[in-house]
Amino acid sequence: MLSVVIPVFNEAESLTILHQELSQVAAAQGYELDVVFVDDGSTDGSWQVIRGLAAADPRVTGLRFRRNFGKAAALSAGFAQARGDLVMTLDADLQDDPHEIPRFLAEMEKGYDVLSGWKKVRYDPWHKVWPSRAFNWLVSTLTGVKLHDHNCGMKCYRRQVFREVRLYGELHRFVPVLAAARGFRTGEIVIRHRPREFGHSKYGAMRIVKGFLDLLTVKFLTGFSQRPQHVLGTVGLASFVVGGLGLMWLAGWWAVSRMSGMQPIHLHERPALLYCLGLLLLGGQLMSIGFLAELFIAYHASETHSYSISEQTTPPSSRPPIEDTVSPRP
Image (cartoon, rainbow, N blue to C red; front, side, top):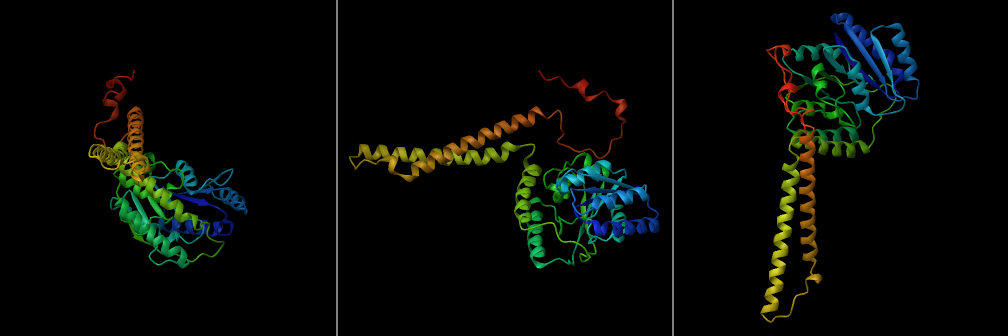
């Protein structure tokens, strides 16, 4: 069974056409299809169209949010409802071509867990294309997951990916990065990108700002989620040492000026004193936050795992439960 999850926000005109194309591909390829439309607070009648499609086709499931919660929430709800072992995601604006699905599934047979589309030729305005290319380069450079189009809405996943990758906020564009951090194999294929026929883009300039802030979050989650003190403590210790050395130098300078009979130095008039004190306090705060983060990680270590198991040879029933071999917390 192939599940297709489609977030919808004010795309009433394109939904019937998209459903027809999906049905054509499924019939031609012999797929057992499972389509999940998630209405993310649409105000243009999209839900009425989804209800009509669900009534006419038992393969269609519709979910409706009470308000707009964002694409990540829509995808999370759709993934929870999807029944297939492979899950495709498409945007509802018809710019993603359902006829590319067989190519995705053929490529997934090579052992990929996450496969992202690459809109090599895009039919978007330049003020969307060039910032997107710069952002994709930045994501690939900082995370090490080399994809040309991290934000492409057309992707294919194995179901087990979403047992370990949790989406919130606007982290949907970073699923390949989050999956790769858990050891899943990611890749991409070039896909056809179609011009928009109906409606307009739902993203503005704030998308760039939010995307950059989310990138910093993802970088921290994938690099230091199990060892926050490594980054916070390193920066804090460096700041603390520089501030401490600066204060020692100022104190020595003041003492020498007093003992040598020189004009005494008034430290409160020296800006360096404020800078050193600031660095000292900042360093102490960062190291304290790092310690608290480590305590939080240690406390919840029994509820979450820092590893990902792909296969298991011995049936779980033949081994004693993990809880029986671990001493309870006091």
